[in-house]
Length: 432
Image (tube, rainbow, N blue to C red; front, side, top):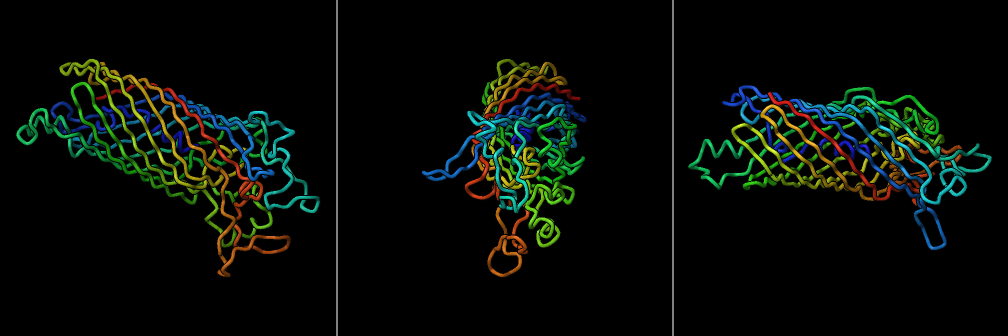
């Protein structure tokens, strides 16, 4: 869920003129170009969370929680031209308000909720011999965050510029047959800031808590390429991207707060064969952006332009242990299955002068259904050829200390149903 909104933030300003527009330098009109961009955004996501339940007809999905997240903040970006169609850029979001709330979904109540009326602990043990059992999550509950998000720096290069090629090489590219503008880039997200610790919520999510932080402290390498081509008043464009994340030793690790884990294996396994394998595992991602800008008014001499922009964004999110819709309710990272995000956007773009730009746009879309709690029970760590889970007094080095019998076992897992996402934003850009 966090990665979905982060991806939406990064794709918000992707008007055609900006997907393949690169800050310039050593150019007749731009000896040195510096672009400053500030985007205010409001984003919201609403998700119904179900849980597998055994019934006479087999396993069914029962409504449990209705989850919502609202985010308000500003994305600040700077682009600096280094040479012809070569730029260095940096951007980072600052969240003024990042609030999550959850309550019982539909007809579910405190009397009928399997989360509230849980009878086993994380180790799968129930009854008086295992100690008192507790509700799996505090319902209703909520969490709130604010602060600086992960900062990204990168380089973009346009090996082919439609306007430049037409102007400089008319014999090679005759008028009316100019090539499409092509831009490629690489971005690197820095592991800065105080790590986002979900354990501060958990059982405390039912009462107000101080604001938390947003940083995930992971290295993320993103490669992307984009094309655009002007046809009279229409400028279609396409962008393809892929991200590979790598968690650091400072990323959040569930073993740093073992009270939310299975107590029969966590103390030994967190310090043993599972050390360093129980923390944040951000997923690989890939995206495809298709759109077109419709230019309704343009004055090339005065550098003025007004246009509409329509686009669709398809993004793949791989499986990973991350910050999901139930992370704050459970007080720990959970392993989510892969899913897709589909988004549609429409916006208005106005360039009042070469140095001043305005953009206003809105986005809506869906996130496909996927399981939010799907940890593997273990691996063959001791080399005996089988995976043995723990019983009372039995050591089990094979068992994953993250595995929670309450929510990771098939028949008890939590699932996010198709989520609705929407957002609005406005940008001001100054170009020098």
